[in-house]
Length: 167
Image 1 (cartoon, rainbow, N blue to C red):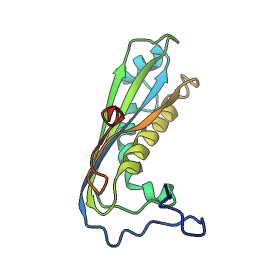
Image 2: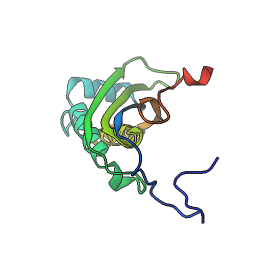
Image 3: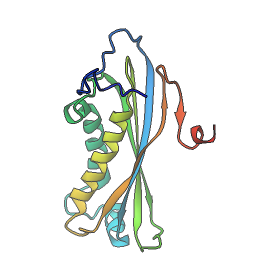
């Protein structure tokens, strides 16, 4: 399978989307931030010294989605028609005694290329923001499991993690 971001000489290039028709496109990504139970409690109580952690992370995620082509070299600039951020705290400690916050970002556009990178960038920057705002109380926080959950639109059509794996 040929990689679309390489030219015939193997050099990186931005894919030419000139001839592609615009379609409605959407993508949802998610990830998780792990922290000590006391850190999650501070976030939920609004007691973190830097302010409302999830409100700031929400704005950071939206801003990041809008800046994706400035961060990822071969991404096309897109006119995003919507970006939604959701945060789901899980106060039940796991086997390592860590709680977590699941971050979900959904991005939409009507254009010639998809918004998967915008959704994943939003999740990454929201996770970094949570870390930045809480690092003074919990330097051991970590995050990961950042992944595309679903996408719709374009030539490749629908993708739903888990559902596509069963085909």
